[in-house]
Length: 257
Image 1 (cartoon, one colour):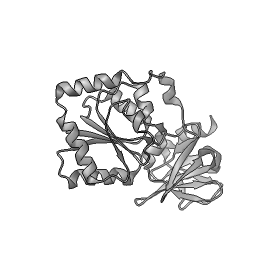
Image 2: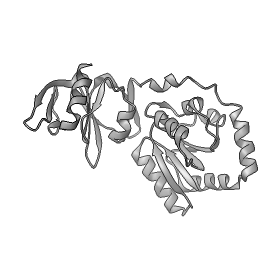
Image 3: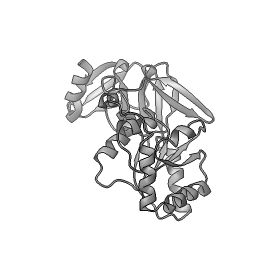
Image 4: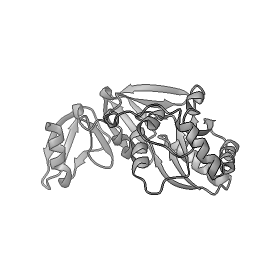
């Protein structure tokens, strides 16, 4: 069984992957998308679609329900979320189960067993009945909208943080951190690859493997002897920020456009 995991929290993705191993399910994880935009793009273009999707509801760039308005999803879905108020909405689309976080192995096994009980004919009938309740598709232009906030998870709290207040994102092998203009910092449980896809490219730039920076945070630029750029921000950074020679022209154009 091929499974796609739609989840923007690394810890939750890791937990679900471990559960598949724990229950010895015949599951091949074909991918992990972390946003509405990523998921829509995959479902529109993928040649080898998954058999089943495990999907979080709160994604980095909005509600997962937007996916069903933006593209046809002819694949059954197991929703995973920390909130129970979306259950009715979930069963208006392709949901065959609804799991509340923290997810237990027994719940995942139950969902997989439920999927396996659906033969080809019953699965087709089920998806057809669900498709009649989908919201009307929205124009592709909606994919070009970007959030103005991110949600930071701290223990049992969800903290909304304005993107205008963020100076840069910084990652190491252990963690990713969002640093605000006032120097405050928050652990942000996402990779830079997924973060940059949900940000407005006019406001944020992925300068290298460690940093995504805000345009407003750039104080000055130094051209090095080897034609790399040394970027200084208005606030302190854990290491010096270099832009490679190959990326220097693109960065200059971004900064001045």
